[in-house]
Image: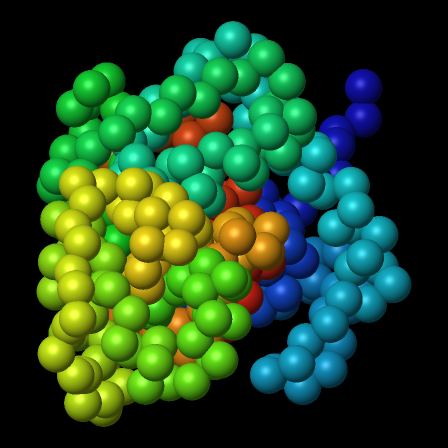
Length: 296
């Protein structure tokens, strides 16, 4: 039997991550290495294969015809390798903890796309708003708003930008004649988990917020969003929580969303990460790239 002609696996992983992400920085985030390391690994892969995979200036690299051909087959091949590893049976389960509103409004509606690609896999979502602790509720990984490097022994994949701003029902928006002062005079809704949302938003955008005519508090963000859609007032919330309702026409965001330094981040232990956890991280990164911010 002749020996297989296989290039570096690290080079293949780096190239496949770039082909999906479209940017070296995003591929580096996913692989938890530096931008330069991804670039060097791809260049080494090109030397091994004797062909160019990328072309163009450093800030705008694109796939060559050979690169597109390799990328088309590489993702499924790596998935097959991951699935064939010991412990990677088709009935494996991944338990992920996250905020309940994020799960309801962003994660679960997208989850069928992941399960279609990984037939037989099971993903169980558990609610937890506390610190990033693995094992809590049986969680293998957590999704949290995060900023900066992870703690030692923790692997992090930031996948979604975070922004926030006011939202309200289309009927209430039209009844206020789209006038800023009348909109600001509407009853203000807030959740108990982010009671200072209105004050922080006004401070961040440099707005002198008039005294509230009325305020209505809700235990959960999901309750507050339903109240806003029902026309009970105007709520300050995260874009990730409101985006689906905006796209369906249940809510409008008259001032867009103000970006914040934290990002929704997938965190898990660095050692002994199951293949399904690696695939979930890559999938989250891809979904996050498709969710564009609505700027102020």
